[in-house]
Image 1: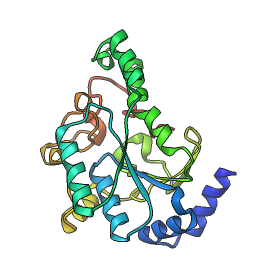
Image 2: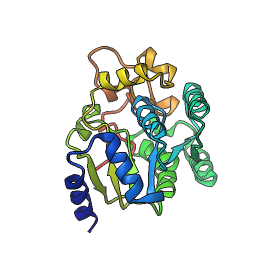
Image 3: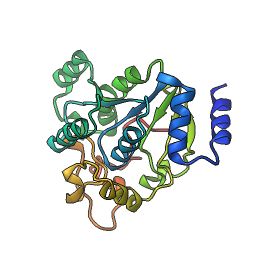
Length: 233
């Protein structure tokens, strides 16, 4: 049924602009549309579009407890500039305590399995809570971000979270994202100017150099699909 709804949405909105789709979803699904932001460049574009059109879309973020100070800075600038509320979800304290007490604070460096365990506790579990009861999940995914994302559709059914995902910037290039941010004076993470394209937790993110893949700076010590479990197919 949900896959059928996804196909219907693709058909209904095929001639819509991105902003028209936002308005359509906000009207069609009322208060069941949410946007998850990590304050990266793509997410800041979406926040700007939502606030520009004064859409009743709930915005939330996941605070893993290990974020860069620069991420908190752009978080603060964003809520002040747009005069909006962004709901914050944290990992369960007991789960974090158990992880650190049994494996230590840097277990994610030791294996992909350990890293995914940390991501699950700090990201996936809080996201599951945040998405519960909603119908549409707006994301900042772009096809060129990674091989794992280049076959996504504008609308997709995410069976893991039992929700329909809307990827409005799917076909945007990084230059289009950067141009929009500059043109509209959108708050940006200062790390972007230092070679950080994809920004996650501080211990797990580094700057990339020219020629490297966009996701190369995430978990750079391991060979993997560079996903934390939020958007993995």
